[in-house]
Image (cartoon, rainbow, N blue to C red; front, side, top):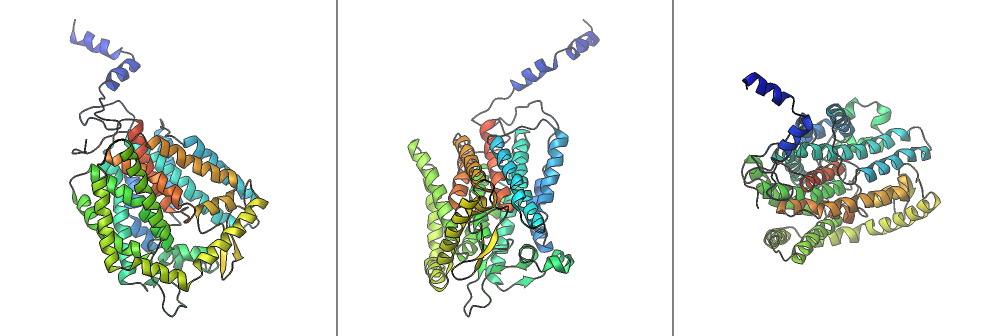
Length: 456
């Protein structure tokens, strides 16, 4: 038979048969990890540069004052890339997330002012962007893009957040208008919500206090956001370190982890400590139940380093001093009581967004001081149920993880659920959370391309 005939016969093979043969070439060496030499048929890969633009260039967006305001624009970019490429794989929890977003969108009918549409749209954009980040990361990982390339931008985000946290330590009174703030029309620039998002502040403190407590906040407007980002990023960084054993980014992460404890402790975020503690207990409980103790050593090292830092920074005394000289606990309780009463008056769709009321000692918005209360007040009880159901579905799916990398990522939905009553994170932190979740789900749902030297 001539070469031409052979080639012709090969060209007549059914496409499905070719795909089946090539798919059998995939030989996972462990759940979720693909042999580096294996290959599969796939469509064009999604690019990684949008994730680099979002997370890796975060210091630039913060310096411009566009970090929060422009974040949904990145979500629109991811949506265009996903829909253009097509063949989108849907991870666990997608249906629940879409139902949740639908309820949030419908709750707009409860808005009482036209001016509130802008802030409502920004929050909805943050929620949609987080979903798209998780979906995009999931598909990029399933496309076979090296794991380190996908995780690298989020780890760079961590390094920048730690550096800005140290700006709050070294220059606590730093405050400056951003280019975006200066460019806003005066009527918008003086709005407290927009001013908080666009103004550059290194810390959050009470300027009227005789002895203010400076709590690192940058790149976020509030220090609680910094604490939430810390709680979500620590497991992500540890997952990267257990997967990648070389490179300058790994060195930067090893240096930044102990350095991060100083600004983290100075935030005095009790919910941050509670969330991370719950995540560690969850992981240790899983490992002990399976007769493994491999996480005991790294956890012990982390706790030891944390304890050594407390010898330099009297965290407990600072928290006790803050709570004894302010009315934070009383105001929180009063806010929760009023929020509960308001939710019972509009349980299905809420009120669309938070609303300012007088608490015991100050004016605070109902539907703040915790994502749980924001969901209940702004979008109603069904939306809050959907959000917690989503975290449960994701946590259950991630419980299939067996590698150290997967274990660290599997703690993320647990940490998120625990801190939800304390801190709100309808901001870029929600995208950070779902970037980690997307990576974890990709690894347990199919083969992903890890770097050489992954612990077996």
